[in-house]
Image 1 (cartoon, rainbow, N blue to C red):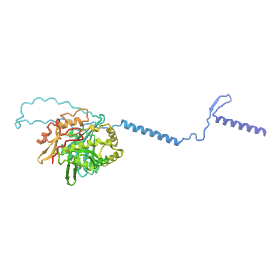
Image 2: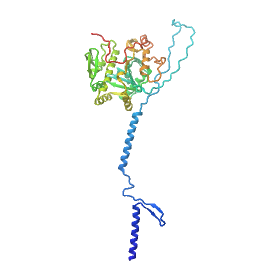
Image 3: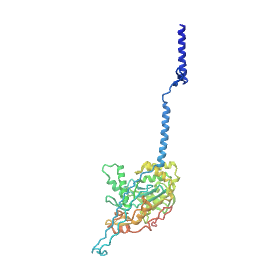
Image 4: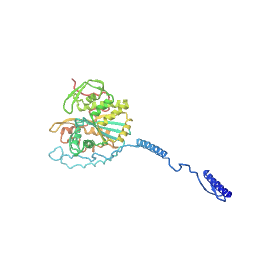
Length: 440
């Protein structure tokens, strides 16, 4: 019995030593003293993942990745631009009338014609874009404010070119008339069952196409702004200081285009309602729409100069008023990009001008049309609206005569006149412009 107890005691001691070796991570040795394998102590909970730490680690990684992505987008994102050419680059020459009916033209053998000029390959300046901006009253379908804003993000330059609302133009579908009626024409001819939003989109796209074809330019974006947005923007800015050149008074009770203007001459703060009166007034101008566009240039210039004084709250209110009254194809990402670039532009030095031309009565109806000077229009396009690295050539510009009616002598006389050195109005609108008007 005593021997049995001794054997049990030795066995227990051997087990204790084994566990002690395991706890200390020692190596077991065989009878010859060689190490066999190491046994490591496994603490309670080892081998089970700490889920909270894993989740936190994943969140940190995702947050860092998101920040890096946003920075990369901000630093390297640039909107894609159309590198094609949306206007006709084929030349069209008018063949002279020959024969006895035209004694000024002889029937002698024709002189050998000079070879055609080499075809120009237009490559896109991807830093330069054109925005078509049109303004209209919700009560009317006419777009009486038509501007093309050219923005060069590499040079930090901006040009604004106004197109007179009565400018004659021929649309790609053959429709002819004033440029301010194109939008309404395409709204009325939009696809069947189109929603109101789809009608506006279709009409703006077709209007852009018509202007592209006529002026031989590329339009990258469009924006249709209702008059309410203009008035609300002025109010959100706290008004705009403008020097009204003379007393303005006019009343129009015509349904759909009601207008009441009552402004005194002098430097004053215009709220939204008074600002609308100022830019819409044209009753006493000798140059009618041309002087009204000069007034618009003066006002826009004054507005831009005061934008750097607005607060964050005012900026939010302006953004809301514009977005509520805006139809555009500019995406949110593109808008962020261009707004960021806009801060680099000295807005006080931007060019603002109106396309040169003159008005006349046309056809049997005697309708009043404004006809662009072809030479001046080409000059304006190449200086302020061209988004290509090559100039639009004279033989290509409006080769289809979309900006005039070849059968109307009065229109052709204006179209062929050279107004490059004698523009209707100057560039770079300042705080004071001389508006020709009828004295009381």
